[in-house]
Length: 333
Image (cartoon, rainbow, N blue to C red):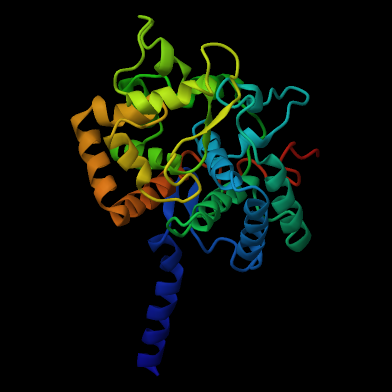
Protein backbone atom coordinates (compact mmCIF):
# COMPACT_ATOMS: atom_id res chain seq x y z
CA UNK A 1 0.00 0.00 0.00
CA UNK A 2 2.82 2.43 0.91
CA UNK A 3 4.48 1.80 -2.47
CA UNK A 4 1.20 2.49 -4.27
CA UNK A 5 0.78 5.78 -2.40
CA UNK A 6 4.33 6.85 -3.21
CA UNK A 7 3.86 5.94 -6.89
CA UNK A 8 0.62 7.90 -6.97
CA UNK A 9 2.28 10.95 -5.45
CA UNK A 10 5.12 10.77 -7.98
CA UNK A 11 2.68 10.62 -10.90
CA UNK A 12 0.64 13.47 -9.43
CA UNK A 13 3.77 15.61 -9.06
CA UNK A 14 4.72 14.99 -12.68
CA UNK A 15 1.26 16.01 -13.86
CA UNK A 16 1.36 19.18 -11.78
CA UNK A 17 4.74 20.37 -13.03
CA UNK A 18 4.39 19.12 -16.63
CA UNK A 19 2.77 22.30 -18.00
CA UNK A 20 5.60 24.37 -16.52
CA UNK A 21 8.23 22.16 -18.15
CA UNK A 22 6.81 23.01 -21.56
CA UNK A 23 5.83 26.58 -20.82
CA UNK A 24 7.31 30.02 -21.04
CA UNK A 25 7.27 32.30 -18.02
CA UNK A 26 5.20 35.40 -18.64
CA UNK A 27 4.78 38.34 -16.35
CA UNK A 28 1.94 37.30 -14.06
CA UNK A 29 1.71 33.69 -15.17
CA UNK A 30 2.72 30.94 -17.57
CA UNK A 31 1.96 30.40 -21.21
CA UNK A 32 1.74 26.75 -22.23
CA UNK A 33 0.42 24.87 -25.27
CA UNK A 34 -2.22 22.89 -23.34
CA UNK A 35 -3.96 26.00 -21.96
CA UNK A 36 -7.24 25.35 -23.85
CA UNK A 37 -7.12 21.55 -23.99
CA UNK A 38 -10.14 21.24 -21.70
CA UNK A 39 -11.89 24.59 -22.08
CA UNK A 40 -11.81 24.63 -25.90
CA UNK A 41 -10.53 21.35 -27.37
CA UNK A 42 -11.83 22.32 -30.86
CA UNK A 43 -9.68 25.47 -31.00
CA UNK A 44 -6.78 24.27 -33.15
CA UNK A 45 -9.01 22.52 -35.68
CA UNK A 46 -11.16 25.63 -36.06
CA UNK A 47 -8.18 27.93 -36.62
CA UNK A 48 -6.48 25.55 -39.02
CA UNK A 49 -9.64 25.13 -41.09
CA UNK A 50 -10.38 28.84 -41.44
CA UNK A 51 -6.75 29.71 -42.22
CA UNK A 52 -6.59 26.98 -44.88
CA UNK A 53 -9.75 28.29 -46.54
CA UNK A 54 -8.49 31.88 -46.42
CA UNK A 55 -5.13 30.99 -48.00
CA UNK A 56 -6.91 28.90 -50.66
CA UNK A 57 -8.90 32.02 -51.58
CA UNK A 58 -5.89 34.35 -51.47
CA UNK A 59 -2.34 32.97 -51.44
CA UNK A 60 -1.00 36.25 -50.03
CA UNK A 61 -3.01 35.72 -46.87
CA UNK A 62 -0.49 33.37 -45.21
CA UNK A 63 2.10 36.14 -45.11
CA UNK A 64 -0.48 38.73 -44.06
CA UNK A 65 -1.66 36.68 -41.08
CA UNK A 66 1.90 35.98 -39.98
CA UNK A 67 2.66 39.71 -40.16
CA UNK A 68 -0.30 40.55 -37.90
CA UNK A 69 1.34 38.57 -35.09
CA UNK A 70 4.65 40.42 -35.56
CA UNK A 71 3.06 43.88 -35.63
CA UNK A 72 0.95 43.07 -32.60
CA UNK A 73 3.78 41.76 -30.43
CA UNK A 74 6.15 44.67 -31.08
CA UNK A 75 3.61 47.14 -29.65
CA UNK A 76 2.71 46.75 -25.97
CA UNK A 77 3.41 43.02 -26.21
CA UNK A 78 1.30 40.22 -27.69
CA UNK A 79 -2.09 41.49 -26.56
CA UNK A 80 -4.15 41.89 -29.77
CA UNK A 81 -4.01 45.70 -29.44
CA UNK A 82 -3.45 45.82 -33.22
CA UNK A 83 -6.93 44.41 -33.85
CA UNK A 84 -8.80 47.22 -32.10
CA UNK A 85 -10.68 49.72 -34.24
CA UNK A 86 -10.83 53.35 -33.19
CA UNK A 87 -13.66 54.01 -30.75
CA UNK A 88 -14.14 56.22 -27.72
CA UNK A 89 -10.70 56.95 -26.29
CA UNK A 90 -9.01 54.27 -28.42
CA UNK A 91 -7.01 55.39 -31.45
CA UNK A 92 -6.39 52.33 -33.60
CA UNK A 93 -2.88 51.13 -34.42
CA UNK A 94 -4.17 50.30 -37.89
CA UNK A 95 -3.59 53.91 -38.92
CA UNK A 96 0.10 53.99 -38.00
CA UNK A 97 2.77 54.44 -40.65
CA UNK A 98 3.84 50.75 -40.61
CA UNK A 99 0.22 49.54 -40.78
CA UNK A 100 -1.79 51.97 -42.90
CA UNK A 101 -2.65 50.56 -46.33
CA UNK A 102 -0.40 47.64 -45.45
CA UNK A 103 -1.58 45.23 -42.74
CA UNK A 104 -4.48 43.03 -43.80
CA UNK A 105 -6.28 39.84 -42.85
CA UNK A 106 -8.48 41.30 -40.12
CA UNK A 107 -11.59 39.74 -41.65
CA UNK A 108 -9.97 36.29 -41.36
CA UNK A 109 -9.33 36.87 -37.66
CA UNK A 110 -12.98 37.97 -37.33
CA UNK A 111 -14.08 34.73 -38.99
CA UNK A 112 -11.92 32.62 -36.69
CA UNK A 113 -13.09 34.50 -33.61
CA UNK A 114 -16.76 34.06 -34.53
CA UNK A 115 -16.30 30.32 -35.02
CA UNK A 116 -14.36 29.97 -31.77
CA UNK A 117 -16.95 32.00 -29.84
CA UNK A 118 -19.68 29.73 -31.12
CA UNK A 119 -17.78 26.64 -29.98
CA UNK A 120 -16.30 28.04 -26.75
CA UNK A 121 -17.92 31.33 -25.68
CA UNK A 122 -15.83 33.86 -23.69
CA UNK A 123 -12.84 31.49 -23.53
CA UNK A 124 -10.13 32.14 -26.15
CA UNK A 125 -8.33 35.47 -26.46
CA UNK A 126 -7.77 37.28 -29.74
CA UNK A 127 -4.07 37.45 -28.85
CA UNK A 128 -3.88 33.65 -28.72
CA UNK A 129 -5.81 33.39 -31.97
CA UNK A 130 -3.18 35.62 -33.62
CA UNK A 131 -0.38 33.38 -32.32
CA UNK A 132 -1.99 30.15 -33.53
CA UNK A 133 -2.94 31.71 -36.86
CA UNK A 134 0.67 32.77 -37.46
CA UNK A 135 1.88 29.20 -36.90
CA UNK A 136 -0.78 27.66 -39.12
CA UNK A 137 -0.06 30.16 -41.90
CA UNK A 138 3.62 29.17 -41.89
CA UNK A 139 2.79 25.45 -41.92
CA UNK A 140 0.33 25.86 -44.81
CA UNK A 141 3.06 27.68 -46.77
CA UNK A 142 5.41 24.72 -46.25
CA UNK A 143 7.28 25.99 -43.21
CA UNK A 144 7.98 24.49 -39.79
CA UNK A 145 5.46 23.50 -37.13
CA UNK A 146 5.90 24.59 -33.52
CA UNK A 147 3.89 24.25 -30.35
CA UNK A 148 2.31 27.61 -29.52
CA UNK A 149 2.39 28.56 -25.83
CA UNK A 150 -1.05 29.93 -24.92
CA UNK A 151 -2.79 31.78 -22.13
CA UNK A 152 -2.57 35.39 -23.30
CA UNK A 153 -5.36 37.84 -22.63
CA UNK A 154 -6.44 40.87 -24.66
CA UNK A 155 -5.59 44.47 -23.93
CA UNK A 156 -8.21 47.15 -23.36
CA UNK A 157 -6.22 49.76 -25.22
CA UNK A 158 -4.01 50.47 -28.22
CA UNK A 159 -0.89 52.57 -28.80
CA UNK A 160 -0.65 54.49 -32.05
CA UNK A 161 2.64 56.06 -30.95
CA UNK A 162 4.03 52.64 -30.03
CA UNK A 163 3.08 51.32 -33.44
CA UNK A 164 4.77 54.26 -35.15
CA UNK A 165 7.94 54.01 -33.07
CA UNK A 166 8.48 50.38 -32.04
CA UNK A 167 7.93 48.39 -35.25
CA UNK A 168 11.18 48.11 -37.28
CA UNK A 169 10.98 49.98 -40.60
CA UNK A 170 12.45 48.76 -43.91
CA UNK A 171 14.59 51.87 -44.41
CA UNK A 172 16.17 52.00 -40.96
CA UNK A 173 19.80 51.17 -40.22
CA UNK A 174 20.91 47.78 -38.98
CA UNK A 175 21.75 49.16 -35.53
CA UNK A 176 18.37 50.88 -35.21
CA UNK A 177 16.50 47.71 -36.11
CA UNK A 178 18.64 45.58 -33.78
CA UNK A 179 18.02 48.08 -30.97
CA UNK A 180 14.27 47.76 -31.50
CA UNK A 181 14.57 43.99 -31.26
CA UNK A 182 16.69 44.20 -28.11
CA UNK A 183 14.09 46.44 -26.45
CA UNK A 184 11.67 43.53 -26.83
CA UNK A 185 14.11 41.04 -25.32
CA UNK A 186 15.09 39.66 -28.72
CA UNK A 187 18.67 39.28 -29.95
CA UNK A 188 20.60 39.25 -33.21
CA UNK A 189 19.76 35.61 -33.94
CA UNK A 190 16.08 36.44 -33.49
CA UNK A 191 16.43 39.40 -35.86
CA UNK A 192 18.02 37.36 -38.66
CA UNK A 193 15.77 34.33 -38.16
CA UNK A 194 12.51 36.29 -37.93
CA UNK A 195 13.47 38.35 -40.99
CA UNK A 196 13.11 35.04 -42.81
CA UNK A 197 9.35 35.58 -42.63
CA UNK A 198 9.99 37.63 -45.77
CA UNK A 199 10.36 34.37 -47.65
CA UNK A 200 6.62 34.83 -48.27
CA UNK A 201 4.59 37.96 -48.90
CA UNK A 202 4.85 41.26 -50.70
CA UNK A 203 6.18 44.75 -50.18
CA UNK A 204 4.92 48.02 -51.64
CA UNK A 205 6.96 50.19 -54.00
CA UNK A 206 7.03 52.94 -51.39
CA UNK A 207 8.88 50.61 -49.02
CA UNK A 208 12.00 50.31 -51.17
CA UNK A 209 11.85 53.09 -53.79
CA UNK A 210 14.81 54.93 -52.24
CA UNK A 211 17.04 51.94 -53.05
CA UNK A 212 16.26 52.35 -56.74
CA UNK A 213 16.73 56.08 -57.14
CA UNK A 214 18.08 57.99 -54.18
CA UNK A 215 19.88 55.90 -51.59
CA UNK A 216 21.21 58.09 -48.74
CA UNK A 217 19.92 61.20 -50.50
CA UNK A 218 22.89 61.35 -52.87
CA UNK A 219 20.93 60.80 -56.06
CA UNK A 220 22.54 57.41 -56.63
CA UNK A 221 20.88 53.98 -56.44
CA UNK A 222 21.80 51.49 -53.75
CA UNK A 223 24.96 49.75 -54.95
CA UNK A 224 24.20 46.69 -52.79
CA UNK A 225 21.20 45.93 -55.04
CA UNK A 226 21.87 43.76 -58.09
CA UNK A 227 21.73 46.06 -61.13
CA UNK A 228 19.59 43.79 -63.33
CA UNK A 229 17.17 43.13 -60.47
CA UNK A 230 16.99 46.88 -59.79
CA UNK A 231 16.21 47.55 -63.45
CA UNK A 232 13.33 45.05 -63.33
CA UNK A 233 11.97 46.69 -60.20
CA UNK A 234 12.12 50.19 -61.72
CA UNK A 235 9.79 49.13 -64.51
CA UNK A 236 6.94 48.85 -61.97
CA UNK A 237 8.21 51.21 -59.26
CA UNK A 238 8.70 54.66 -60.82
CA UNK A 239 10.37 57.62 -59.08
CA UNK A 240 6.93 58.94 -58.18
CA UNK A 241 3.50 57.33 -58.18
CA UNK A 242 2.71 53.64 -57.90
CA UNK A 243 3.30 53.66 -54.16
CA UNK A 244 0.96 50.71 -53.59
CA UNK A 245 2.34 48.54 -56.40
CA UNK A 246 3.22 45.14 -54.93
CA UNK A 247 6.43 43.13 -55.34
CA UNK A 248 7.37 39.70 -54.04
CA UNK A 249 9.74 39.84 -51.08
CA UNK A 250 11.19 36.55 -52.34
CA UNK A 251 10.91 36.53 -56.14
CA UNK A 252 12.16 32.92 -56.40
CA UNK A 253 9.41 31.16 -54.40
CA UNK A 254 7.04 33.88 -53.18
CA UNK A 255 4.40 31.57 -51.70
CA UNK A 256 6.70 28.88 -50.31
CA UNK A 257 8.11 29.19 -46.81
CA UNK A 258 11.73 28.15 -47.43
CA UNK A 259 15.26 29.55 -47.26
CA UNK A 260 15.45 31.13 -50.73
CA UNK A 261 15.05 34.55 -49.05
CA UNK A 262 18.57 34.16 -47.65
CA UNK A 263 19.93 32.87 -50.95
CA UNK A 264 18.57 36.01 -52.61
CA UNK A 265 20.38 38.18 -50.09
CA UNK A 266 23.69 36.44 -50.87
CA UNK A 267 23.44 37.65 -54.48
CA UNK A 268 22.27 41.18 -53.61
CA UNK A 269 18.61 40.54 -54.41
CA UNK A 270 17.09 41.33 -51.05
CA UNK A 271 14.13 43.57 -51.86
CA UNK A 272 14.07 45.78 -48.77
CA UNK A 273 17.01 47.65 -47.33
CA UNK A 274 16.28 45.87 -44.04
CA UNK A 275 16.75 42.55 -45.86
CA UNK A 276 20.05 43.34 -47.58
CA UNK A 277 21.72 44.92 -44.56
CA UNK A 278 21.65 41.52 -42.86
CA UNK A 279 24.43 40.65 -45.31
CA UNK A 280 26.32 43.94 -45.53
CA UNK A 281 26.37 45.60 -42.11
CA UNK A 282 27.20 43.04 -39.42
CA UNK A 283 29.61 40.07 -39.51
CA UNK A 284 27.55 37.93 -37.12
CA UNK A 285 24.37 38.54 -39.10
CA UNK A 286 26.26 37.80 -42.31
CA UNK A 287 27.33 34.43 -40.95
CA UNK A 288 23.76 33.55 -39.99
CA UNK A 289 22.48 34.52 -43.43
CA UNK A 290 25.01 32.18 -45.01
CA UNK A 291 24.15 29.35 -42.61
CA UNK A 292 20.42 29.69 -43.26
CA UNK A 293 21.01 29.87 -47.02
CA UNK A 294 22.96 26.61 -46.81
CA UNK A 295 20.78 24.81 -44.27
CA UNK A 296 16.99 25.15 -44.37
CA UNK A 297 16.52 22.89 -41.33
CA UNK A 298 18.68 25.22 -39.25
CA UNK A 299 16.61 28.21 -40.41
CA UNK A 300 13.36 26.40 -39.57
CA UNK A 301 14.68 25.49 -36.13
CA UNK A 302 15.85 29.01 -35.32
CA UNK A 303 12.72 30.62 -36.76
CA UNK A 304 10.43 28.40 -34.68
CA UNK A 305 12.31 29.19 -31.48
CA UNK A 306 12.45 32.92 -32.23
CA UNK A 307 8.76 33.25 -33.09
CA UNK A 308 7.86 31.52 -29.80
CA UNK A 309 10.21 33.93 -28.01
CA UNK A 310 8.57 36.86 -29.77
CA UNK A 311 5.14 35.53 -28.85
CA UNK A 312 6.16 35.77 -25.21
CA UNK A 313 6.72 39.54 -25.27
CA UNK A 314 4.83 41.04 -22.31
CA UNK A 315 1.62 39.01 -22.56
CA UNK A 316 -1.31 39.81 -20.31
CA UNK A 317 -2.08 36.79 -18.14
CA UNK A 318 -4.07 35.90 -15.05
CA UNK A 319 -6.65 38.59 -14.31
CA UNK A 320 -5.06 41.30 -16.44
CA UNK A 321 -6.75 42.36 -19.63
CA UNK A 322 -9.82 40.52 -20.85
CA UNK A 323 -11.12 37.93 -23.31
CA UNK A 324 -12.67 40.08 -26.02
CA UNK A 325 -15.90 38.82 -27.55
CA UNK A 326 -15.18 40.84 -30.68
CA UNK A 327 -11.51 41.32 -31.58
CA UNK A 328 -12.18 44.81 -32.96
CA UNK A 329 -13.50 46.32 -29.75
CA UNK A 330 -13.16 45.99 -26.00
CA UNK A 331 -15.95 44.39 -23.99
CA UNK A 332 -18.57 46.65 -22.47
CA UNK A 333 -19.42 46.01 -18.85
